[in-house]
Image: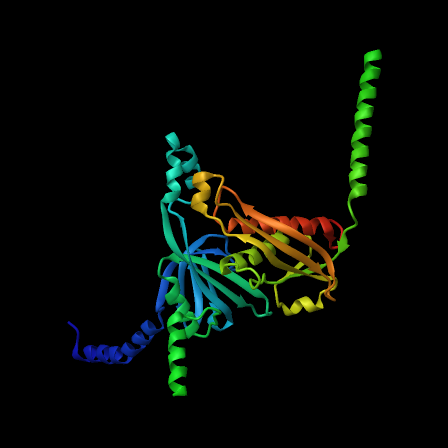
Length: 175
Length: 173
């Protein structure tokens, strides 16, 4: 049986810690997706799989052996693109398409999935320019880009919706 | 006895020919230029529309391959403040001359179409901006691999060209 004093202590503790827990959740990533780092992040092998998040003004790539963070403010350009890649990739996919009987392997390249590409260019502490490329499921790159731009990253290709809004605002100002 | 003499003569002639060929090849090689560091500039995409992922992939692969070949003791990134202090610094600027994105699916199905290829003019310059070496280098992917593999091919060839024409001046390179 929990005594009345204990119950009060627990209630008071929860009352004060509750908001802290909520802050913790607020700091959690708004935008998170599975991604493949194709090339560019220091100390990572090509085509490393992981999770890409934008949290507290940093782009964070979390993979099996650790994580790499890039400050959004240091990103000089963030651009999205679209491409497709083989469902069964790598050496196995290539060998399977060659070895499949009666030329059926030539059909394999048609089993492709569409992916989004996120390309960033950023500067390190010495001013050196770095570039990194990520691929992710379709429709995931734009929210990440939007979040990065909101947190201080720059882009050479602004969002179309933002462009239209700016144009409308400037027209209204003229009137 | 006579057969032995013939064999010895044949071996001697063969060895002479081999050494003569090697000496001629060495004589043909131009003297390597001395450089202890290189600064790789980002590939501009103004003149020819180059997708950003190709632009970044070219740049990153170039840096990786130059570091791998170890022609230059130091490889600096575009804008690195430490590059200014390096003695015998050369700058590598590449501009896109030709670019064909290709198509991976088409490449694998037809094997003759869909190749990705790119030609870049690579200009190795000294600190004053004088050209030391200008080469058009092509990177391509014909059958296996994604389109970005052409950037790896280009970077490998560029590092080879750098290796053939530059040396750090230190022993062992």
